[in-house]
Length: 143
Image (tube, rainbow, N blue to C red):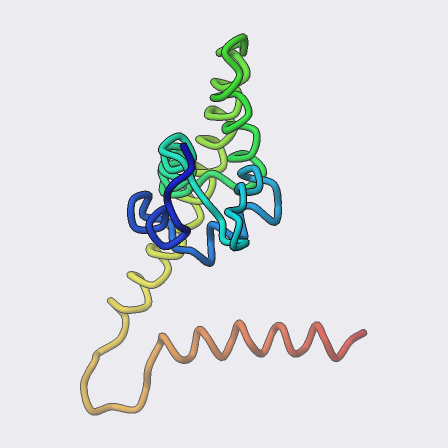
């Protein structure tokens, strides 16, 4: 029974109405049925699917991956190997991002440790940023 408005579905699922419409428009979730007045109507199953999507987004899955995951979740004859492959590929991307963030943190830590943080104008943090920006500007002017 489709008896929930988009605002009620948004509240129950934790996904705002704008995102629900967006997910419908790109095919992450199927288009909602419409009431006689043209308003979208959602069932308890639709809300459950929206919660699934929200959880997958919270875990950092891409919209493309989520679309595949929703399809796999709804397919009772799916092979769990497909789901595992998606999860493992996502974990590899997360691991690469963690390494990138750790490198950024380490660089900032080194620069912060070198900065006196007092009244002196000399600041290794700004010098490093300017050096990196200068290198980029030089690369641009050579082309």
